[in-house]
Length: 581
Image (cartoon, rainbow, N blue to C red; front, side, top):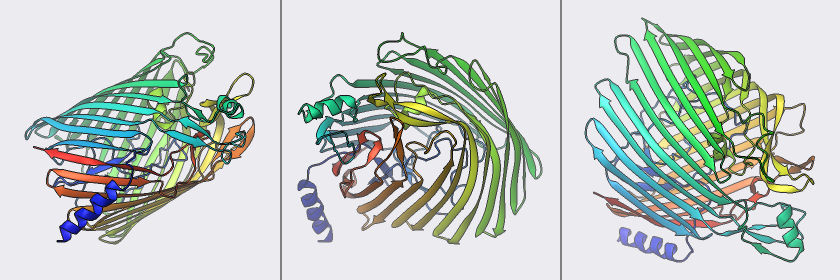
């Protein structure tokens, strides 16, 4: 009877609303017993962007791990040790805790659609070959209002088309105490520049209240191939990890960027210490089109082919109460960028109270290659002829505490200060007549300082209740600009998941950002604070059928991702997931 009542309630609720999809990433969780949980996780952009400080990690605990979606994982605190060295590695493959085929279909308002397929092609004790396909699209209109853009005489509807398609083929093979893995993935992203600009302002003044932006389109194709070979543990006192990665970026304007990233880690173990070295190399090959009325590819000093090499030798000492890593990074750029840079790389983790309190601290730095492939994930509305210059961080100092109050409650707090040479900030692009456009340029601060303080809390009550709460404060020290454009001073991210019964789970999330400013015609414009409240529910009707529904931006708050780009209002995404043998 209880199951029947729950069925009637959820089906009635699902049929009473129009299904939708929000523009942001929708994450999915899959547990080992093949429960499908559709999580709503607002993604909070890091204010610093260039962040070599290790992410906050929880103290090791013995909770059962979850196996997340084949595409994206929710931002959670992992129960693992802080890894201070591998900042720039390509994403590592996640092992699958299930071997069933999955088909997910969904849709909603804003004329949105979702489709996802996961299928194991070949699996046994040593081999794992998988295929993943994903489609997410939205063709709805978004209101641009005078409250957010004072130049508008009244509201105007702008079509915010986005159509993203991904495919990924991954393979891994266990070879005794070694592992070979590889993947190939392709990503095609078609979208419209729907944001506020001088053209939309002129349309509104001419009495036009709706535009489909047909002449304002962009398409981006990305291809990546990765091969990795590593030892799972030490082999006769040696441990190694080698991988190479090829990435292609191309867009509708015939701009192409080829990136080859090679990374080699080797470590030799002694009785209570070890010595290791990390080497990585970036090879960037640019293929620039001819300049035109819209884009000038000859003016940008950062659109040349070049190579960046980085060496990081390090010595590690550890005992029962402490772990200390002493290293140094040497970076060398050939062709463009900073010719040479040396930074420390020192880290310590000390146990204050056994299994309860840990102190960690570090002094490091880095040289970061900012290629198109990664930048477009941060801001896809960046102008085609704007390639970010590389960033050099001469010093990054941080310290923090990790607490374990009980088996279920972990807390982590830290603070740090870093100096960033050539720190970049996105600003709205202007025409030669100083008219605002709906694409973005980048401006740079030669020596920016940023103080960061952050705290994260994680609570797990078996598999029934999970709570994650994170907060961050950023204070910038700038000489050239008044604000760190488009970067928040305050960030709050809350996520909770509760299993009502063995078949029904609900998720509640809240995201907050404050203190963001945009630079418009040399004037600082304060952006609306981000308030995003989301609620989701999943119901496993049968062992092969799951339905989900998610409500995003429940309060229908009008806020902007970037100046000119208002996010979707209240929207709903619903659908079904089929698990096949």
